[in-house]
Amino acid sequence: MESQDNKFNYKIILAALVAVVIGILIAFYYSYAQSTAQIDFLEQEKAILVKDLTIMKADVDRLSALNEVNEIELEDSKYKVQQLIDSVGRLTFTIDKLREFKTELRRLEAKNDSLKLKNNFLRYNNMLLGDKYEETRRQMEELRANSSSLAEAEALQRRKILELNQQLKTKSYLKLQYPEAASYRLRGTRPIKTNKASTIEKIRGCFTIMPDPSEANTEKVLYIQFLDIDKQVIEDNANTITVNGNVYSKRVEVLFTGDEMLVCDYISIPEGSLDEGIYTLNVFEDERLLATSEFQLK
Image 1 (tube, rainbow, N blue to C red):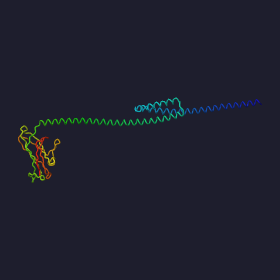
Image 2 (image 1 turned 120 degrees about the vertical axis):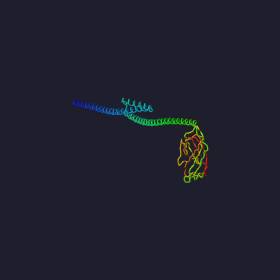
Image 3 (image 1 turned 30 degrees about the horizontal axis):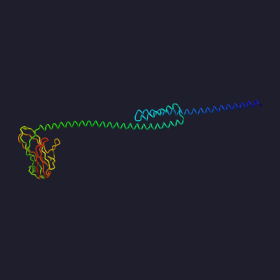
Image 4 (image 1 turned 180 degrees about the horizontal axis):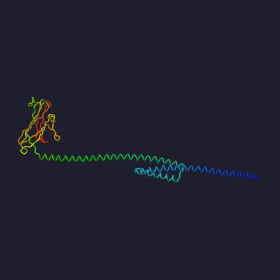
């Protein structure tokens, strides 16, 4: 009887030991499974973090190449990213460290976005400066071309002035005397001399060319200019003659014989177009005034 009790107790102890071993094994397995799950989770987070950090490093490298202005900040970011990559590679972080790294990563991403915006802004400014430079260069080229054209025009003008001065020095002009103006009204087709301004329809200018044998049998072109009381040129049948910017009433061509010669010519005006006052007769050869006189209309 006692032997049976001992066997029964032995079986109970053995069962208890087996149960303890099984319990230990179950606890160990559960702990192992939990550790494996946590390691797998950390490995996945490591892969994601390494990928994000690699992309971040590539962006930082690209920005560093694009703009040296941000070189110091980029180098600091590259250093921190490399530290994070090294830490992840050694798996020396916990869940709390992972959260800290994620926070740092978000901060670096924000800084990276800020650097991108700065870089885009600088590139836009560079583009605007490039456009302004091209526009300024084009304007400078136009100014150089205009300056060259103006210089050529000024040189040509100076040559013309010198040539004209030379001509004026060497040219001999006619000598005129007795310039005289007379005014007429018309009765039918017959002119009648008068000085009543309101009835005048024609004005005659006369002058005498003095003898000059050296100019005998030469064609001369003279210009008659009648000025009203306001010193405005009086038109001939509503027409004037303009030569080198000077305005005349009429052009007179003369074949000069070399002897004393009286020359007269008329201009026609609308009746009643003149006012009372002092009028002027001028006679020019080329642009040189040879004779002048005044006459009065009442």
